[in-house]
Amino acid sequence: MKKATVIKIVLLISIVLVSCLCCCLLLLGIGTLSPKISTTNSNVSSQEPTDTTVEAICKPENDKKKFNLKGFAELGNSSFCMDTCSVNFYTYSRNDFNGKDISINTSLKRGTGANQMEAPGVIYTKEDIKIHDKNGLLIPYSQYLQLTGTLNYSTTSIYKCTFNADKITQLSQKDVPIEPIPQATAINFTQYCDPNNRTDFVSLEGYLINPSLLYSYHKRYQIDFYPTTNSKDITHTTANITIGKGINQMEPLSSQYNSSDVKIHDVNNGIISFNHKYRLTGLRSLTSTKGDKGQNLMCNQYSGLTVLSIQPI
Image (tube, rainbow, N blue to C red; front, side, top):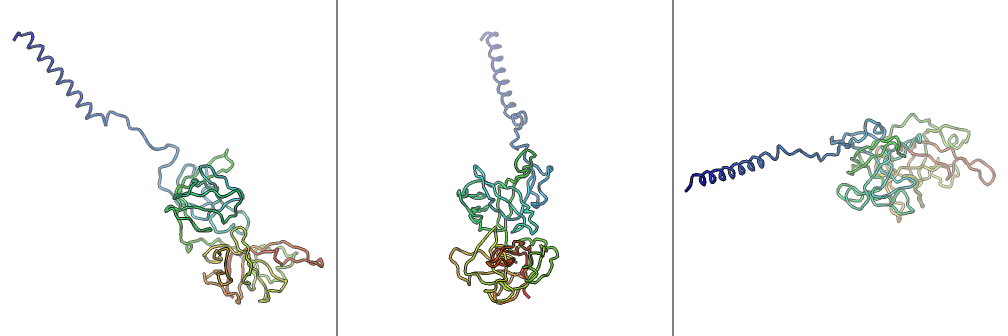
């Protein structure tokens, strides 16, 4: 074999070996040579959620942070649903006694699956709210909840703060927080029914009358409250009692119910007796209407006491 031919073969083999070596080095080093691509949305915090309250969350420094909120979801006077549905979320199971109605606009994913809310009909009541928890279970109305999600803070939106919830957990009704109650003024029915008495927050003693016909309004049942056990007495008022299974609440009723189904919990979480005397504490209505003889009827079915405490005497 000629010398020139041998040299060409050796060079060809060398080129092939060098090429293979380069390929191996490239394959071994591709993990460190290639840039890493982040899959994290830089606009949303990856932190673990922090416990907070409706009253404390709405701050600019909380924008895009994750939180746990405990409270109650409620449909507003209008509910907007597209990909998500909006609800009001409250710390307490009723609007607070001074009428501030502290809540946060909350966005829930629309649907019938886990952590989703079904869109209400065109005409609805507050009891028509249908929310599914993290296990896909339909949540009872006025159920105590924990929402986990992210706060959106904006100075240009209709709502300064919106809480975008992506996880919904049902909590025990035994853990429902008790709204702080200020010092109440003890008055009797004569003072209560006096339209010139402008005292707002009061305690009043009397008897709850088991209703034959029951009305609900704004998360509360309306029960007649009398100074005696005589249900024909014109001097009476309406006790507006929160719907629920906790203390100072009345358990939800079906559309078909008997008087024996009415269960009201007192401040000790005992079920009240309708022939027992109780002290109700709450916010007094100042509505006054005229009777057929022109007399003031401060105490009738049109007045009301928003009840925060039911104390047996």
